[in-house]
Image 1 (cartoon, rainbow, N blue to C red):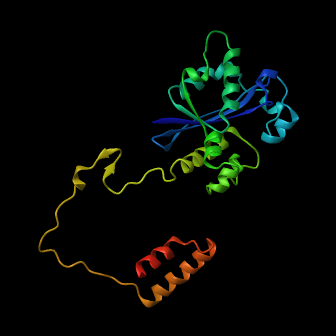
Image 2 (cartoon, rainbow, N blue to C red):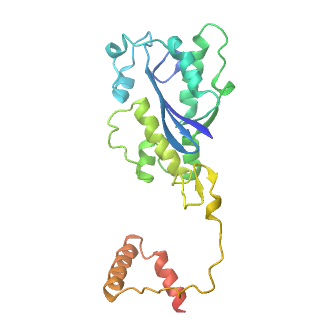
Length: 241
């Protein structure tokens, strides 16, 4: 499964008003694992950046003067994302801008839906956490994703952060290997084998008084942190009945 986590920065909010993409950032996931492959490009938009947009991403008109136009990188961009599922936070915004850029090119370049499927993490987050804030920063806090480097928005940085958030939202741990599989192939050497009938008795190691006291202290702290809802306490109570 190949996914491309994508983000853009733009001159403003509405492509219908002539606003353009000025930065594209993409990172690749294969089978829910980040790879070393990414696509990143700043773009010359041939128009001024709205002051409000510049306050968000910090990209200036002067910085973009010598950058290529979208037409010059369109094929490379499409080759990178083609056939993948795009993972985007507030996908209609970014997809709308990409479709607008494609429509400006000479010839029939199509639309995003012609060569990619799209997963909107904002829609997903709203379904999972109704009534709560679901901005990328809010999701970082909710899922303990480090976004300390995000003083300003940046397409590649935000794509990398969104990749971590998406993986946390859709299952947390990327992969769990217990020796039964290696590189996606079944390890036939780890098949279940019967125990020898003359095996020695299993050694039982019991916790010391000091370890039991430390365990009790930790549970007390945990119980206080979750308002008396510690599941371990419930399990101990059920075993004592």
